[in-house]
Length: 285
Length: 232
Image (cartoon, rainbow over all chains, first blue to last red; front, side, top):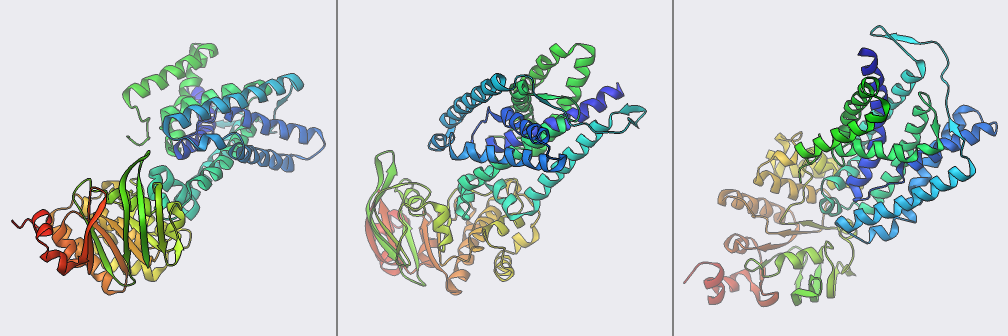
């Protein structure tokens, strides 16, 4: 059981960071980005191609992060422009449809040109024992990076003017405008950040299991489930929900079967919405 | 300082405010009084860039700001405190005040002026806005607006939801700000308080300016006395 819980935490931290990007964009701008998983996959492919081209690991990782951020900026400047003209439910629906279109195009292209590509970043060294369970070094490095990313997010949102400005838009958009904050610029910034987070997750994930060109939609689905359970717009909620669902997923996969674990996660999400419609740490409307 | 001419605004083609003109001079305190639904909130929200206008002009320090988004108007020195306050429920008092100075860093001198004016805020710097009382929230909304060092402070019904004692205190605080040279425009239903505070006023009814004059003149007007001062 301890082994499954530890594996679950490793996966759950990544789920939490993944969902943070999605939940921030939604909480800030009412935009649901269904091409989120594809952003992660493209970043992973950038790292893969860079390394195949002979670029060493760290610059390749840097290019991957840059690609993630640029993808977020690209969405903001192109496909989301008509979305910004709408408000409320119409905005959510149009963003969902348009980004789904982007996801199909990206998936189609990657499957056509590079169907067999997958990124695996190998972390050398033997297993490390934690609570008597031998853990792969890749899992530990991935978790450490994820925790550092969460700490960076925490500092950004708590202590920097820009981070506070972003939070204020999530809290009350009109209030934010009344202190001179432009919500559109904050959304652009957060779309870039979400792309970088997607890239970080793709790379840390690839230290544990290969990230292949087909994984886009499953990444998006995981992020969506965690977002809903954690509460829209809440990064702490995403972290909490990610870890809980990571553990649920890991235990379900061992005792019931990998195939059913996604169904169980969906079930957990559905139950959460029934009991707490705003999610674990979401704001009540 | 502020010159509004032939201003009309409303929702989706239905104007709530029709062809309104008024002005606020430097150093003045001006009130716009009117009953619920007279169009005060629509007028103020539209002037301050939170909702669109239909027609008209708003000159603020010789610049036409009509139709500009709120975030740009604020940076020109017009601070707006809306009736619904629009605070950030899960953010602390201290975070509100430092965001008030956005995009600059909060100026320590302004911060101490605000905290002297509202000692309650100084005691509650780490409290979340969502857990504060109505009176404290109003202080915070005014304090947040002051942090940008506005030339003109516009308040929409600052006494909404406040007990009479707190409403009086709110106007006392505004009086202090006036004496420090701040120009103030206020919309109010609690007419006696606003009247004692302001130099001049306008009466808004059904989206039209019906009357204007100094506060003393308006206080003598039989229609105003009947409708807003409870004198029969």
